[in-house]
Image 1 (cartoon, rainbow, N blue to C red):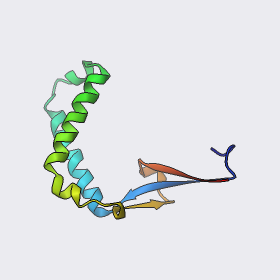
Image 2: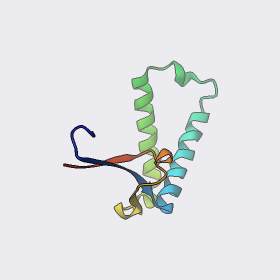
Image 3: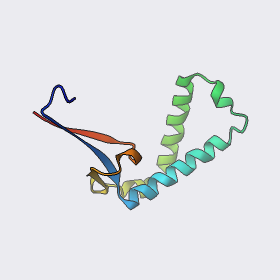
Amino acid sequence: MAPAFAAVELRGVAGSPRYVAFNRGEKERMEHVLRLDPLGLRHRLPRRALQLAYDAALTATRRRATTAGAAITPEDFTLVAEGLDAIPDLVAVCRV
């Protein structure tokens, strides 16, 4: 982006402790689902089939966590400039 803009700043989208706890719970539930495949058969399925199964499992998981999920609002996220290596979601702030 640097060739197209005069200034480019990279920021990370950091979640609040409430969001981090919610996300950790979702991850634990998904890991539980993966433990149901001890032989690793999922590694032999086509990527599209895995994506459909993952999406369905995530949707089901989120339906059960509606109370916690509904409590998450835009205020639970902030843009940070530090620790970007540990943050999975990045935003580029570009100025002309």
